[in-house]
Image (tube, rainbow, N blue to C red; front, side):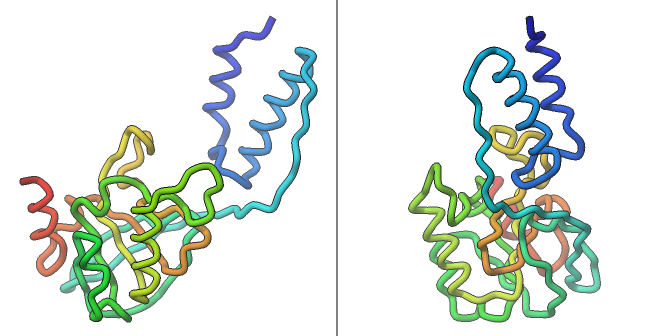
Amino acid sequence: MVDVLSVVDRLCSVVPDRRPGSAGNREAVDLVARLLGSAGWDVSTPEFDCLDWVGGDGSVEICDETIQVVPSPYGLGVDAVGPLRVVTGLVDLSRPDLAGAVVAVTGDLVAEPMTPKSFPFYGSDEHTAIIAALEAAQPVAVVAATGKHPELCGALDPFPWIEDGDFDVPAAAVRPDDARVPGWVGRAVRSRED
């Protein structure tokens, strides 16, 4: 007899995590395949190409203040300088002054994580439009003031707004409280609280 709680505990304690393409993911798949196979199930574990990603630290410097950011998983790295542009809605993403800028995204636009462009299981027309508009705007980087989203991202604070190896713009997330420096998203973040 299998102790289901111990299996769940093992799956939840895979170190460092079970992200697709990682050693932790392969360990979890092997465990489940062994358990199902020993229960008499026909099990196959087809392989496919998958990105793996190892993150690091990040920061943005604005008005002589350094803000720590969390680079987006599977995203591009960047070391760039550009004017800061704050956007709060989809209509803002068509502004011509975003090209070459660091785009700070806040408000309703970052209320939930974006669906990756090539995600085969679910799609969102709204997310597709946001991602396409961001890429068309050609900023040097995107920083999203996200905070927590426990329904989808557990305890991640800030949660990654964009987690997509196919996204063409370097991206990161920052807690809204950490983004409140002169000249950045303080004004836009306050409007979200109204």
